[in-house]
Image 1 (cartoon, rainbow, N blue to C red):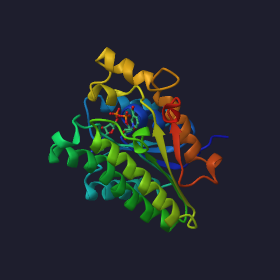
Image 2 (tube, protein in one colour; image 1 turned 180 degrees about the vertical axis):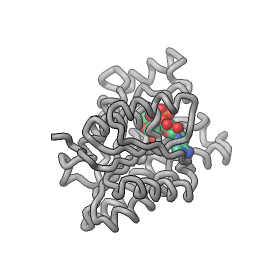
Image 3 (cartoon, rainbow, N blue to C red; image 1 turned 135 degrees about the vertical axis):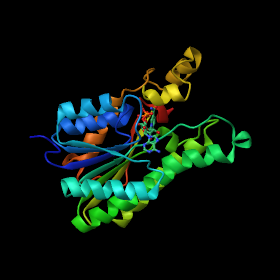
Length: 253
Ligand SMILES: NC(=O)c1ccc[n+]([C@@H]2O[C@H](COP(=O)([O-])OP(=O)(O)OC[C@H]3O[C@@H](n4cnc5c(N)ncnc54)[C@H](O)[C@@H]3O)[C@@H](O)[C@H]2O)c1
């Protein structure tokens, strides 16, 4: 028996890295997939990989930092699939590195706009539908950096701490309405995000990051997708408000 048979799963940032792995994993479990993302060079190829697992998939162009675009994306999802059973609020950016004293207001607002406001925008519209249905599961993509600090990334760290706060608050607010809300806190995962942050290219920096994980390696997107399927499915029916650490032991040091 597939774990998400005929469930509608809405995934932001589903065309790359962790989001794409989660979309493919959910499609394999029988879910209808809605990918909400910005268009990029390899968008069509990435979307095709998801469709190959389950043809019941649609793409909606959406900038999660824009309130109305998210509202429209959720409306389109309901228009096509009638229900919203699972939402993975995963879109995120790493931002420019600098210490707080050197961080521009623009750099701060950009990361907060996507990583924190984006998750609020999604949760607000997803919850409106899930309350009507009296059922639903929300999974928010936080980070190990939602639990501890990291030099030169105050915007990212603050946004990911905020995502855990949003997760815990929503879990409390909707616990008796059939809605579960959880977060995932990945360690460093080998995805295009690390290229954007300049981590993959610099061998010394990459080795330093690897050494921060007791398992002495980076994680794989598929390892995060395994946790997502657990939180999205009935396997986690008594789990709400948690922040699942999938981090090769990063946070126990
Ligand atoms: N890779 C890691 O090491 C790591 C670790 C912890 C947490 N995370 C988090 O996991 C999530 C996915 O990251 P990833 O590593 O797969 O990165 P990625 O860069 O491979 O994918 C990010 C996705 O988000 C989308 N996106 C960016 N801005 C958007 C916007 N304004 N509106 C809609 N979509 C937008 C991108 O188009 C892309 O598809 C992010 O929230 C990230 O912060 C990543």
